[in-house]
Image 1: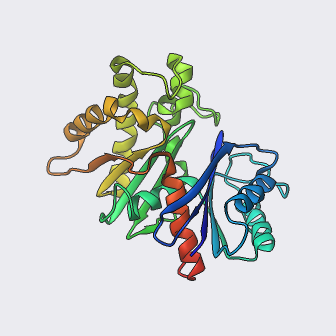
Image 2: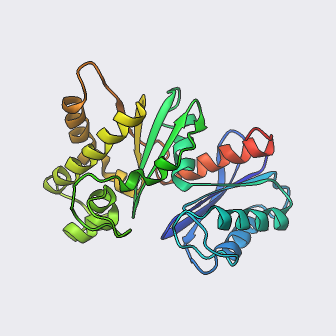
Image 3: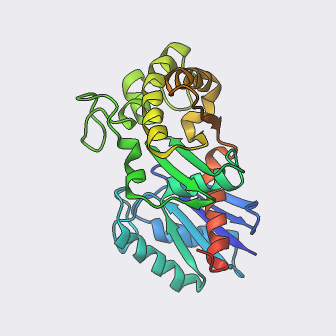
Length: 275
């Protein structure tokens, strides 16, 4: 099969040509232009696979208009419009899904969480996205889309959404820059990580208590420095979980390509009408 997997982020987007095994053959990375989402996708898809495409899957936070402009608030109607336009243009099955969900699927089926029944994926980039997979299927629950905005500090720091004390306001790349003047790719000292991890652990405990996963996978740009914060996080969780309970915590296998791998899995399923 020739499958197209797409991952649209706030600052960067990726389009990949892959096969039914989730293997990426070719991929392109380019800056996200909120004004030209659809046109950019069409040109990149043609660049990678001029013909013989079997299906397309897109992971995206949201679409806000017929022209393909992004507002990054969940909008099912607008997503449906983009899906319809891509179907018409390429005459193949197309499916759109939340970007954290596609990343969680990639890690649960073929990545760090492979073989586990319930996997929670926490993507820490410019924002915080959470996806849950149960039995190799995306767990469809509107609550999961808001897990990056759970309140971990009542009356705390203001989040970009306008709320206060949200997880994203403390651990996202945007928050790290605002709080400590550090970019995601900068070296971040252990002392800063110790502060960030306090809030990450609070958020994870909340999620673990609610969804009882077998494994939590940490991905996104911030996870590139996982050796600095994962051991501390695991230590805090081991001391905070009820006696006799434990959860595996791992770094994502596919890094910033988790969403592409998950999208290829979805594309295969929609091509075979198993979705």
